[in-house]
Figure 1: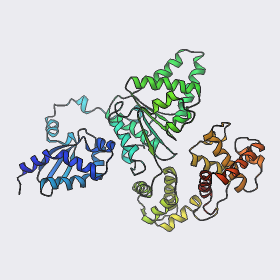
Figure 2: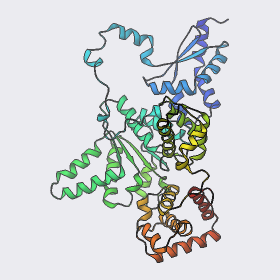
Figure 3: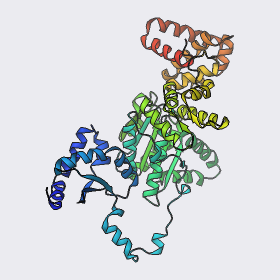
Length: 471
């Protein structure tokens, strides 16, 4: 049996080898390895327990390591030691030296120890409920999550800008708020600003209008945005093409980047797929890291719902979770909506335990898994917008860019073929006031494409299944 000193020396000497074994066996990307594993160091071995030091007092990292990697460390450290060992991840404040410092009492002044943690009001625009510790990580979002954590831990240094993209309701906004909260809590005094592109645009318009009377208003607007430490701008795609707004954003982006401040952007698609995006924006957006978020897989949907379920005292069967996961295909918002509906149903009916049958009954008007749906103009519009990740405003607008025209024409075709009691005039009216000849031409073009274009045929099949699974 080796002595404790010998085991400690062996583990200290081979700790980097153990980390490399974890990289290989867990198939970690460079970003995941650099975020979670690389910063760790061997601290001590005592009474059969290997203490591993996390370099900063980051309880989120401690929790994540315990959940995802502790078993791997146990296995590979035991192999190196030649005996079975247990593992503990230790924060700096939990080390013996930190405990001794706390015991001295006079090491910290009353002013330092009584300083309150920053509150939500210190971080402009952030939503209290969106944090890293309630973000469910899965195969669909692991890369984006790891990138967001890396940015939060080293703002302005790692991946600047960070560009998150994906369809609606997949977690982009959640990650942006999480970054803001993490930086705000760990870098006191940081000026953090979250804003939607719509809000930014409205402020630009108001600054221009009011600036005609007071020249200081535009200066105050620019100072607000160009002096922050972290700018989180959601749905940046809606700024593109609005000349005055995108010009202000261009100079704001440059000012922050040159000052080493962190920029995080989100969009429904990557820069290379934004057809109207100017090259000066494209090159800047692509100068940092681009990370996508896909629709959640079955396992991730189950994990999200079980995390939601922890908030309620009612017992929920796995069959009920599975029923929702199998019937919600598109995004997390719908998933949460379905879950909230079964909770409300259980409360109204005093149900102590939610089974698959109860979930199906609660959601019969929400999911329509087997019954025919009544297809309306609005249902067609919502389905097409969700599928193509375009806003209703864009679909109903007069824009004629390729990324809008085809979805609009598909909507015309679907309305004509599947909405009861329709007319070209009514369809045109429902689609933003288009005249009947535009609808006729749209229907005709789609009919021709369906004969020759395999991609359009596949898209139509998907849209029909979303509108009504029985079609």
